[in-house]
Amino acid sequence: MMNLASAMALGDASSLWSLIPKPLPFAVSLKLELRGGILGLPASSMTCSIEAERPPNRTTELQPVIDQSNGNIVRKLNKDVASLAKPLSVSNISAYPNDDRKVRISFKGLPGSYSEDAALKAYPNCESVPCNEFEDAFKAVELWMADKAVLPIENSSGGSIHRNYDLLLRHRLHIVGEVQLATNLCLLALPGVRAEQLKRVLSHPQALALSDTALNRLGVVRENVDDTAGAAQYVASNNLRDAGVVAGARTAELYGLNILAEGIQDDLRNVTRYLVLAREPIIPRTDRPYRTSIVFTLDEGPGVLFKVLALFALREINLTKIESRPQRNRPVRVVDDSNMGTAKYFDYLFYIDFEASMAEPRAQHALGLLQEHATFLRVLGCYPIDIAS
Image 1 (cartoon, one colour):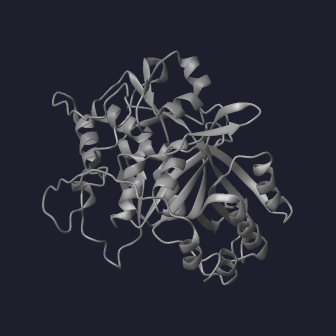
Image 2 (tube, rainbow, N blue to C red):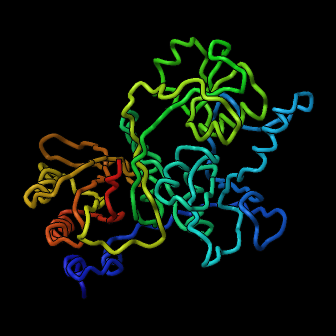
């Protein structure tokens, strides 16, 4: 029987993944709904939802309303917005993509969102598959509605996106790449509207938080929505001349808005890191810098985590990220200590990123020894590091 170390030595990714313990599949209740036919549905004609997922409460509902009394500009904006792809969700079953079709990338949000910017940076000629929720983006790949998914995992100012860490463990997609995208937040408004006329600004909560100083100077009310591009769509479709939007420059072009100010974020060097996910892992190589992402659990005991981290330090493997998350299926561990009595501790999952390819002997040895300490170990992916500026 092949063990972990021998599978790594052979560079056999499929053998390696078969040796990693697999969690139980997550049951999702799907509500199926098809409109306009069954086969060959275009993305713009599909909507879907997961019954188990509820969208977070938001101050403004993103439901475009066409005002027939407005002028030509508003009618043109609504026409442009209507032509954009509608978000997918996993209850719409479409035909499998043709082999000659360009790569399809799913992401959370509407066209013009920062996640789509990251997808276009990784795959400039890709076909975008916008989704309502992060869960939908995972499911779109699992159900062959998309070839890959691009999702944010951490921001240099806002920190980790914990929801996506949980989804990485719940689903069986593999990390095959990463994208680091510099954040350029812009203040947008309808044509002819000046900044001093704005009474409120709509955007994603993190975008509003990152541009706190600029918004304080304006003295505007802030309204949270799910998506930066969704905020732009709402303002454009409803001709809200007292409302501005914090979003990207490409969003302004898509929804017919003017850019009143660029680079309004507090930290001009703000960067968001995105992961590229696929149904199959890639074969690790050594011809360029690689990053490997893993998740594991450990038995309770003094110095256990220290011993695990030493496995990497002794082999000069640089750890770039350590993240801990309580286990949802076993959040509390009860320990009976004869001296101190019964105690309860949180039981954690540890997510680690390290700079080494699984094709390297030092990484193979470190993971082989880690398996001896871990009660659960899963390799989430081994993928090239994004070194682009």
